[in-house]
Amino acid sequence: MQKISAALSLSLATFASGFLLAACETPSTPPNGTANNGATSTPAAQTTTSSGSGLKIGSLLPTTGDLASIGQQMAAAVPLVVETVNACGGVNGQPVSLVAVDDQTDPRAGAAGMTKLATIDKVAGVVGSFASSVSTAAVSIAAQNKVMLVSPGSTSPVFTEKAQKGDFQGFWARTVPPDSYQGPALAELAQKKGFKRVSTIVINNDYGVGFEKAFVQAFEKLGGTVVNKNNPVRYDPKATTFETEAASAFAGKPDAVLGVFYVETGSLLLKSAYQQGVAQGVQVMLTDGMKSDEFPVQVGKTGDGKFIASGIIGTVPGSDGKGLEALNKLWQSKKGSAPGEFAPQAWDATALLVLAAQAAKENTGVGIAGKIREVSSAPGVEVTDVCEGLKLIKEGKDINYQGASGNVDIDANGDVIGVYDVWAVGDDGKIKTVDKVTPK
Image (cartoon, rainbow, N blue to C red; front, side, top):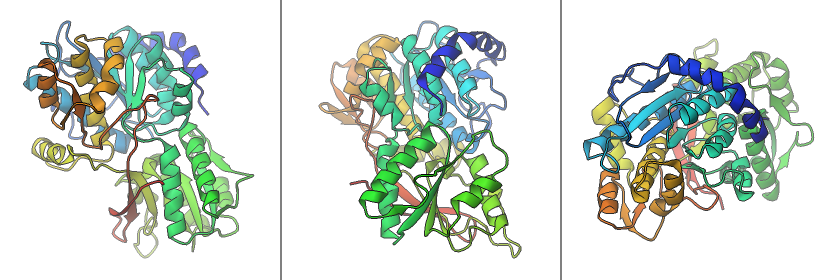
């Protein structure tokens, strides 16, 4: 498991790496000048706009690596906000500039990228990261340099615990609820499905272990049994073969197996379970880290052409905010499709950074950290449009930003509460939302 202290030791060691990343920086391009998914092909930084002494923000999201298929959609949302804001006058009278860095779904690359953004690019705020292990590596660097880090996807409960201790000095927030909520939501779904005996298999990092803990506690309170509680199955994030782990998780034919994975490694693990014949007759339940249209294809098909992943169910933080319809229309007009998973959360994280900077009347991380909770919560005029919010703030009015992902009322620990979509893989390999569940 990655620890906060690891990020501290990495910050100096990775400083040189930051300079190397800077050397790879590409010239300024418009927000829509990247590939269709908004991703860069290398772990380079990409400046999408430039604005002298105006507000400068960064993004630290995975466009390559284990979470690339989801991270590319998230990364595409950030420049869309910047483009929108600059079209309506920018922040504090100047355009906003953006430096995008690919964290490669890797804590070391994330630490190097955060060091570069904070010490070389001198950003005031960063949207990132997705993987909890990467955010763990980045957040202490952000706090040390007084940069506001807002994650649209890191769900580990560890961040709440650290925030309560004051470790982040107020320079941390997220627009996605922690797994201390999603774990109980999935436990309720398991009970609703009639599962009594469940085993778990998780990626061995803050995300996987934190989710496992939250689920086990909630499922046992509901009367369920976690059959491998005393001998949990946790796999190395760098692993490439999973025969032993798959066999252990499915041993004894539990009613269901909860898998807390990332797409690349999780797909390989599920494929291994099928090839060994251990998954037959066992329901697989997954989480947000696997909610990608690509994973059923990566797991593969049976000999008769049926998708192996057919019938798998899972949960993912839902998007039901008052601003979602407007984002869907904008995304459709710009990209010809609907926004992918966590794109609304990335949109909201970016919007909160610019709104807080305007409320603080300064383009600094200290200013953003001091105002981000104020602009996200009552009292204030409810606004869903980021430009309307900026206008009202300039007029001296308080606002309560209502996001695309939800109401994003950030609490003292940087957390928000949300609902969860229940999704399922059909026989055609397509993922569909089939229900909603809210933790009690």
